[in-house]
Image (tube, rainbow, N blue to C red):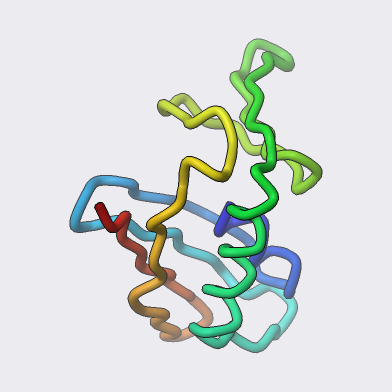
Length: 110
């Protein structure tokens, strides 16, 4: 979800790490886009969580794809929730922008 929302402002997701205590999504900046503000991205995530967007899994050309409602899809082999409402407790804790690489760090609050 974070990847889709940040891509909408011009960044390109290149990797993600979702382990508790180390969770982040990393982006490159191919379009000289400005980094998102922490509060703005947090609000956009909260909107998607409230919408309870369905999350579905499909296979295309032998690769597993995970789609989040109307946001789009990514190739991914991880475990996923059924809809975005299950991400209640998501908190963006830090956004770091260094040399055209943006890292969005988040936590899942219990």
